[in-house]
Image (cartoon, rainbow, N blue to C red; front, side, top):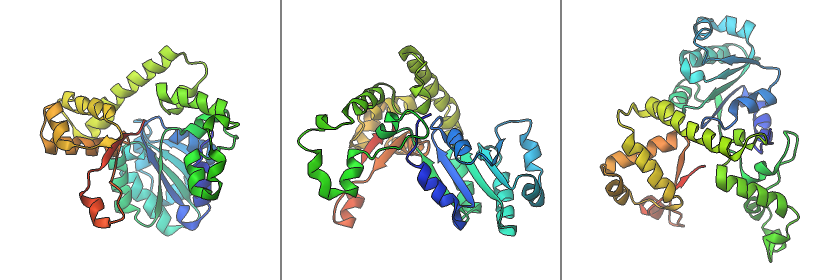
Length: 296
């Protein structure tokens, strides 16, 4: 288990009044369930993905939720959107109960949360491991700041990073984490030391298949996945470059509107990030070409 930088923030929010309901979302296999169960061991864990138990949960009244599950983690809650209404009813009637809602389908979960839990829930997005997190070896380790974070937090100490990062006393662990990240990315499951490189590549292959068969079909109900897959591969090769939608459409063989729609699907499923252009002039930010980044 790798340590996560976001744990301190989650615990701070959970202690506040507005932290009575936490909604943790993100791509599949980013460690949402593991993180929630470690941070809130006193909470009951309810898997809404279980088709046998799901109807039992949906039939509970607000009073029953308050009595049976005053503190609970609801995993894959988007599988039963009606439960969001139940949690809202509990929130409005009693001050003691607290809940953590987990889900990997951003559009299905967040639409319901924003509709029913507006002002009642804090939304937290969980991404794959960062390089400093990859450096850690246990849950209790302290996650160091990255060089970029130090530049932002302590700009007066910038000269200490010079003349070379090779002089850092963490260079060995940073280099090891960087090499792992380049080959396998930052998904927590791939940090298991018992896995071989072949096992990791197999896991990634299955992840892509699961993502295409479950998340994309949930989001878009696409009959033909080939154009979407082609665009995903094209953007992966163009990551961090300026986004030319017309050129992408010509390369993939679909319309500009289809490319824009597919990119939105990639954003909603936490596979890509469209970064707006930066300019001191706010109006120019709206018209300049953004960049697209594959997140892992």
